[in-house]
Length: 114
Image 1 (tube, rainbow, N blue to C red):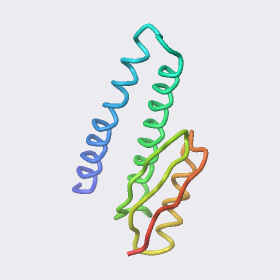
Image 2: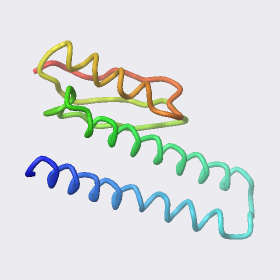
Image 3: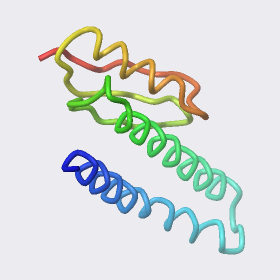
Image 4: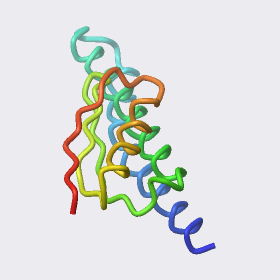
């Protein structure tokens, strides 16, 4: 039960943190498009935020990926996974999970073993 509560709390915090770029992107998209590059940038930011949230959620629900201490950043569909893992198998599993998420075009490995 504690694990489920912790996972729920993490997902809630992550959703809130990612709502900020969505809100900013939404403001730009809802305005009259004064310039197309700003609008395209807003779309990209929101798409990258969705990918990051999907990768984090996928990592949270995988029993093999428990106790990971990793962060995920996304830019133009390229996901960068950073942080620490216990062993090589855990590193490989984290990268495999990230690369299987819809929208991910590449995964950059910046994971270190403890």
